Length: 401
Ligand SMILES: [Fe+2]
Ligand SMILES: [Fe+2]
Image (tube, rainbow, N blue to C red; front, side, top):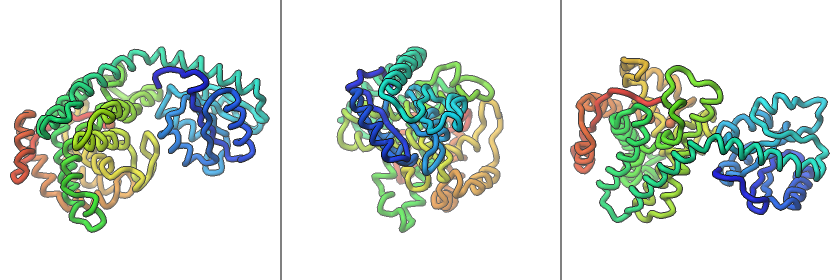
């Protein structure tokens, strides 16, 4: 969120399971000149949060369908620049320290007076400005990336091959900072395509996974980590484990990537628009897990777009089956298959895992062919000749998943 809006623009999401309290808070927030949205449910709160991107979120500490603190932790992970106010029913029972540790910026105890509400909103808004100032460097980087993206992709009249080239070039900009080569992107695009082709033969997927879907997936899977261009160097390039705060910043990369592509999506039409929209899906959801334990939204099952579910498996396979900077060897294919099976129905969609094994020969062929050191030109010409779709990419370095 780029700036603190004036009260008349600021959106405040209020999540409280007591309907009468919710109604009173809505009226008070409105009277103060803000725009309230309310829900009684944590699940609905997550959805509204993703859709509205409110400046301030107020969360009751105890919700009917989960803990308010747990919800706060999740949302704070996704957007540390949003201001969060925890609402407590009883200050003697609830623990403000726990709320502050989870990322709360403010704390209100019921019954909430108008003066207390106004004071707390103003206080957290000031704090939010300071956080945003600290993240200014990142915002400048992101703006730069958006400008490059716009420049590259707005030309919707260019041929599909050139569009592909532009997308790959853009992704390389992001991956370059992450010490990645384009080879990971090429391989995982090919793996995604192979898995999708396997799925297309399944009656549950044959309608959705048609030729257009597969072409778009192949073109846009490489966009998955584009948001890493907006992560500061000292976190992105850090050797060794990230601390909690660094991890929270790193886990913003799906949202940064989506926001970047969002600016482009408004300006392109036709097939380029379709590709950008799928790119946004992949950016946003490629770290979600089938069991709901992923990020940024903790979506589960079929709530996660199919494109992102496929890319999640392709990205995992390539990351583990290729050497890393800190692990100069690749796990053997059989070992990676064991890992994938162990995560069937947990990290990965079970039907996508089945499709992966149905096209296992093709996966191995892609991996083997990837050992050749081919460049982007040969990648494009390969793709143009789909009948002879010998994939590309040498394994060298792989990204942090
Ligand atoms: Fe990622
Ligand atoms: Fe990746």
